[in-house]
Structures are given as structure tokens and as C-alpha cells.
Amino acid sequence: MQRQHLTARAADPLAVVSDICGLHAQVLSSAQLTLWARVEDPPDVNELLWRDRSLVKTWAQRGTLHLHRTDELPLWVGAQAALKPRYETKSWLKHFKLTQKDVQTILEGVPAALREGPKTREELAEIHPLLKRGYGDLLKPLAFRGELIYTEDGRFALPDPFEPLAPEQATREVARRFLTRYGPASREELAKWFGHHSPAQAGKWFPEDVVETEFGLALEEDVEAIEAAEPEGHVRLLPAFDQFVVAAPRGDDRIYRPGGWFSPVLLVDGVMAGVWKLDDGVVSIEPFGKLGKAVREAAEAEGARLGDVLWQ
Image (cartoon, rainbow, N blue to C red; front, side, top):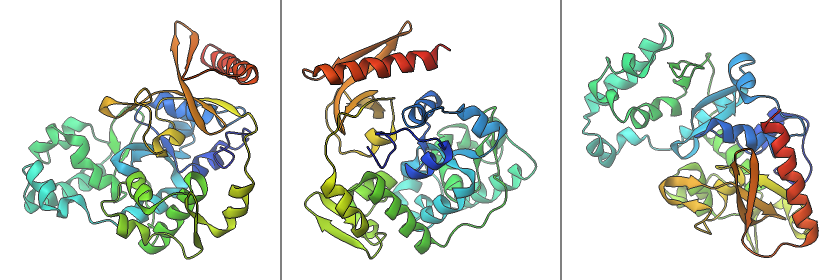
């Protein structure tokens, strides 16, 4: 919780985005609340995305939509380059009934079209008819290559020109951030979190200063802080698809629901102690067990703060 700014809220939202490896953006309102849980006075993510352009919306880890810092796009694209592209696997081609010629048409045609300006899904479908359906999966490889991002009106565009980091440098940095924010962890957990097909290969991403602890792998420089960490009564309301929840090992089916849905969570000293929802302006918390008075009061204060943000 401390490493994710969940024990003390931060002042710099962009630093938080870096620290937690982006904002999960399948639902944009959840990205906003992910910042709310960690930043004292969070700005509107729409301002950061479409006005300041300090954030960019694109497909990233696990092939899911994320908001990443625009100046860190070279890092995430560089790390994706270390993976075997999906379009080079026979199973992916067979699933979408594509040939290598079809793939090349998409990989070359979409960026060429976007150089003329932002395009809608329908306009891109003129490049290849299969883009009319399942367009997300067929466009993700372009996002992984740094050749496609979202625009404010839901169209697609090219990002400003940039040079991706070398894959070895990028993967080391991504693995380091993962361990220090989501660790201790295993190579299997890193593979699942990033969307890597091979835990063995994901394990090669870890930097040299990784050590084994009783809880999993961690950076050597973090071990002392891990061993010293103690529960201190920290309580937060995390939104659906919060990064803390997405990266954790799967658990209670009231949180990890069918269809890839992640419920909003009551977090108490790192433990997912319940779920919550918002109905008619009222925050309702459903704990999984009995809560002590101090935790209950802290949860009520979080709910009141959330209400102030949502209805101001």
C-alpha cells in the first residue's frame, strides 16, 4: 500500500501513474477513481489525456486499455517488442482467419492511413474487411508497436514520433517497477500481469539485484522495508479495475467476477476486506467480516470523501 501511495496520498498525479505502471482504463471513470484513491487533489484524467496530453490511452499490458504517461510510451512499447508478436503465431492467425498477407496489409495500411489524420473504426475497416469485427484484437498489435492510440472522440491516431527503448533496457525497468510496486512476486505473476506467454522468459526480465524472500522475489534494496512493514490501520476504497486488485493473485469471487470484471474493493492494510458500490449517490460497503470501530470509521470517512468528489 505504501509503494502505491495508499497509505499517504501523493501530490503529483503523473508520478503516481509512473509508480503504479499506468491506470487501467477499460472503464475511464475507474481510472479517475484510481487516482482519487492515491492523490490528495486529483485532476480530471480527461484534462491530462486530451488537453495536456500528458497521458495517452492505448492498449498495453495484457492487451487491455491503459492510460500511460505520454513521455513513458517508449518504455512500454520497448517492453512489448521483447515478446513474440501475436500475428506470428499460427493459433492467432487461425483464430482470426488471417494469412500473413492479411497481417501485412493491416500493419502497413493502418499507420499509412493514420498519417493522414485520425480515423474511425469504419474508416480503418476500408483497409481490410476483418477490421469491421474484432477490431480491438486486430489493432492491438499496432498499439504494441507504438503506432496507434486513442483520440478524445474515440477515433484512432498515430502518437507523436518517438524512439522506443531497447527491449532489454525496457523489460528490466518494467520488471523493476513491477517488483517494487506489486512484489514480492514470482516470474509467473509477472508473466500474467504483463501478458507474457512464458513465465520462464518473463523471469529473464528481472534485474540482477533480485533476491528470494519467504513471500517471493523482491529487489534487494526493498527487503528491509518489506520486513519492517506493519499494519497501521490504513483504509481505502478502491474502484473497479484498480491496479492493486488487478495485479493481486485471484481470490474472492465477489471481487474477481465472471467476464473479467473486478469489483470495487474495501482495502484494509493490504487485505481486500469487502466490496462497495454506489447507488443513487450513496456509497454502500459490504464487508466480508466484522470490522473494528476504527476501520469502520475510516471506511465511512473514505465513503464521504468519495461522495464529495462525485457530487461536487
